Length: 381
Image 1 (spheres, rainbow, N blue to C red):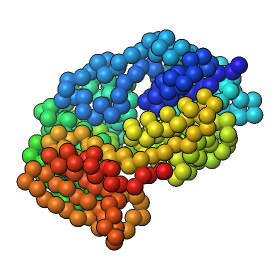
Image 2 (image 1 turned 120 degrees about the vertical axis):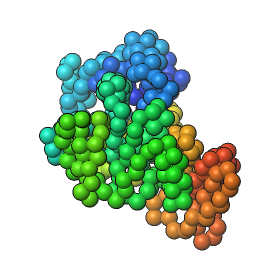
Image 3 (image 1 turned 90 degrees about the vertical axis):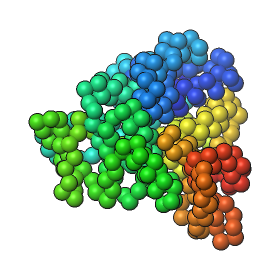
């Protein structure tokens, strides 16, 4: 019997493999990884510096250890180049591999900015353990860091770097940090809290050029301003990895389109994690991956199971001002109602009938997360 093949050994790939093994000890299982297959927590990349964690210290297990634990074959440093849907095989640098069912857990890649200047190639991003190792190497020779993007990852890195003693600047085309997650008042509180840590904000503009200077790098912004820095980190967002699926003729939109069973337009190929668009939802967070892995494992083990997504708030790792956000669904109608407390903020997004559709909590008010989450409608029921 040909194995179930999982492409990817990030959280989605390994979580699925673990869930499969809980249900079926002997199902032939093969994982194929473009990197070294080590296990690590990707969300920890944006706050590992203040805890002085190296890339090696973030890794908790090797591919060899995981192969033994999962009773699976794991091929590392093997990049799959194409999928033969008719022949049910995948082609790679390491050869051709047949599959019974194929799982795409390909993740997402950083959005690449088209910047000009003689040092445009100096722009860094941190999306995996190898990226983080290179980032740490560069930080050893840097004191000033410019972050492009004031979203979730940009703010977490800004807090982490500032806490570690770096001079941090953040550039974003929006009007405030975390613009897609929280209401203005909460964003302004975070902006002030990180400002007290020394973070310099530059909103309403973008980076245009990166050039070498006598003392490092000079970034020219669209508003004509210049920022001198030693290192530039791009945190402008992630794009689901869909090229392999698209070239194989699978339906893709923002991500690889799958149904509630995580099945693609080819019912022998499934997708989950950051690369997948589940019933129109692309949710690049930990909890959706775990729910998807449990459901898909049951399906692969013989019991077809739809994925269900309850409300899943996002914990923002900014110790300078703790935040939890559960943004309302797209196109929701309603308004934010803000309660300002001495020790934090409770922001509730309610519709015209007073029903809670989203919330944001800051400071000590984050303790209300569980109670408010229970009041939210499910994302996929």
